[in-house]
Image (cartoon, rainbow, N blue to C red; front, side, top):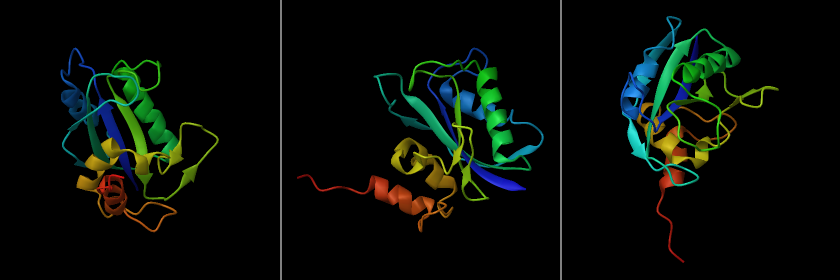
Length: 162
């Protein structure tokens, strides 16, 4: 079995599942019988990146499955489409956004441009680390001598005003 940490985001209502928070909860029930959600952070309201837009609901989940990273990525992208996600502008409004952050196998690099584990922007995005630290603070970051909690502390530490 593989363990994964994934990021979830939504900033658009869905006709059936309601608010972005409802979308995130519903998505975790639709991953398939071969994927087990072992932890789900509470959804957190975050500011949208890029152009001014609607606030996001962000969460993190821990999964267990026999699926390898490319297979899980395909499952997540299919679920995004099932919820009505369409390719559009970067950082635009979306019903559902799912990203693989970490997996128990460490690093994953492939020719597939959308799949790099750990997620290349993991340590720079508070909207990812805030929910992730709640459910996986001790998960080590591959290739680094730090854990999720330390990455979160570095990102959120007060900085002197100069």
